[in-house]
Amino acid sequence: MKVYKIVAINLGSTSTKIAYYENDRCVLKENLSHQSSDLKGFATVWEQYDYRMDAICGFLDAHGIRVEKLDAFVTRGGHTKPLSGGVYRVNELMLEQSRSERYGNHPTDLGLQIAWGFARYGPVPLTVDPPTTDEFEPLARYSGLAEMPRRSSFQVLNHRAVGKQFAKDQGKDYRALNLIVAHMGGGITVAAHKKGRLVDANNGIAGDGPFSTNRTGTLPVGALVDACYSGAFTYQQMIRKINGEGGLMAYLGDADAYRAEQEAAKGSQKHREALEAMCYQTSKEIAACAAVLCGEVDAIIITGGMAHSLMMMDWIRRRVEFIAPVALYPGEYEMQSLALSAYDALRGMERIKELV
Image (cartoon, rainbow, N blue to C red):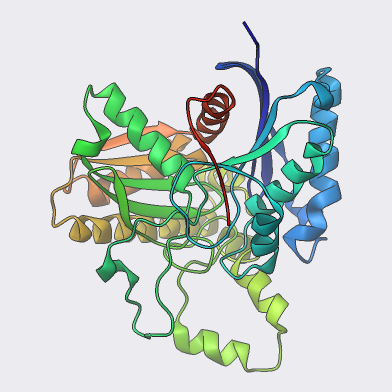
C-alpha cells in the first residue's frame, strides 16, 4: 500500500503552522511563531518570502523530511476570483491573481507562492477551500454603493471544518443545521452557516467587522476618507495600518492576545479594556448573523486561538448565549482539513480542480 507523504502549511499574521502527514495520520506538527518586531521590518507580505521559507525549511531539515520525497505540498488558499469549494492545484493564474491583491491580501497568499516554490522538487502544490469561496445570498452582497459589493473573503476552510466537526460530535448532519461560527485568530470573522452554506460573513481581511490582533476591522468612514486624503499616508501605508498595524497592535503596541491577557490579569486596565472591546465587537457581529438566520440558530461556535481564553470567552458568552448555546472549539481544524483533503485528492477520492 502506497504511503502518501504530505506537508501542510497555514500562514497566519504572526505564525506559520506546519504539519507532516503520512496518509491520514499526522506524524508531527508545529506552530512557528514570529515576533511582531521581526514582521514590522517587511512593508508587504511578499517581502516575507525568504523569512517564511527559511522557517519552513528549518522545520523540514530538523525532522529529516526530504522535499523530493513528498507527494503533495498543500497550503491554505490565497485570494483569487470567487470559486466553488474544493481542492485546487496551484497554477500560474492563481499566483498572478493572488499577487495582484485585487481580491484581498493576507499571508495565506504567500502560502501559494511557497507551495509553488517547493513544487519544483516534485510535490504537487495544492490548496483547499480558498478564502474567496463564495456562497453568499443576494442580499448579503449589498453594501450601500452599487460599485462596491460586499465580497465573500474569510477563513472559509476553518469555518466549514469546525462546522462539520461540531455536527459530527452532535451526531447530526452539517447540512441540516443553522450555525454561527466565529473564528478568532489573527483575524476575526463571523459567518452564518445556513444548512451547510456560508451565506454571509464579514471580510476580516479588508477592514470589515470586529478589530482583531493587528487588523482594524470596520472604521468610521468619514475619518478614514479624511486620513486617506490628508497627504500624511501613501496608499501602501494606509493598507498597512488597516491590515498589520491595527487592532491590538494599534492600542497596545503588541499583536499578541495571550500577552495582552497576561497583562490584564496583572491589573492593566488598558490591556483589559482593549481585549474586552474586541470581544464586544465580536459579540455584535455574532448577533448580526443571528438576524441573517432569522433567529433560527442551532448553535454558536467559537474557534481559533483566542477560544482558549476563558476570560474572553466569558465576555462573549454573557452577550450572545441568549441567542443559542455556545460551543468552544479552541485552535483550528485547518491543518487537518488541508492534509486529509490532499490525501483524498492524491488517491482519487476527490477531484483536483484548476483555476481557469
